Length: 297
Ligand code: ARG
View 1 (cartoon, rainbow, N blue to C red):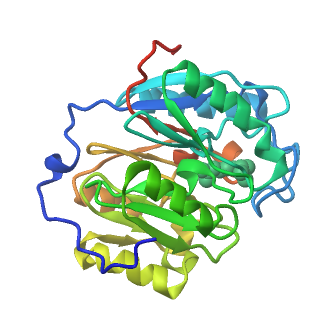
View 2 (cartoon, rainbow, N blue to C red; view 1 turned 135 degrees about the vertical axis):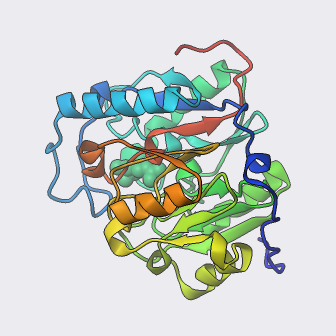
């Protein structure tokens, strides 16, 4: 793992980080079979079978429409017995046609692995397996810095630090471990979001001290958007950032103003039914390079 000094994010104009013209591909999964069936994070407690499929379907459709305005959306079929499959960010991590497939920590989600594997292979991606002995939960716990200079990799409740080595080897990229210490923020993408203008939203209290120092060594003060707890628990950091657009659950007016002042167009989508399972906008989407084989959308 990288313990080398962290270089600051390079100062380049907004549009140079992620040109608007680049339309990414996003993998989503219909919530047709979505349910809160078990409790594997604190948000699910008290919500077993407490979500409405009809409302979930409406909310997901609004998210689908918002994401479709900035990206090509491709779909994987939901599968019986995998009610969390809707959270495609946990399928794996993809870059340059290579997918590190998730090896879920909880047996409740391990059944999803073969469905995602089949989808990636059929879409022409190269799949790398992460051993069961070193759980890894995909893009939920691993986020590339926007300038591509490193991979931020969470560990703690789900992903193991030992799995990070495979990520470093897969892409020959510097991996910076970030230790998650608050059970509510059990995936990195629930409390940390690199944004397309080279800034980042994060909830400092979700990390141990060394991890906060690593984040702050990379993002200088004016590039840090530290979240108050009020927004953190609304999953504000669980944001989809494409060019100047940010798509997320409803947030405070103050945070919305802060993001708009940075030049972002903020699209809020009500995702309350998914919060009951511990997920929001970014969890429901996996970012992909263009599939080599034609896929359904
Ligand atoms: N119920 C799911 C779980 O606990 C929610 C996953 C949220 N995904 C994410 N990328 N944070 O695994």
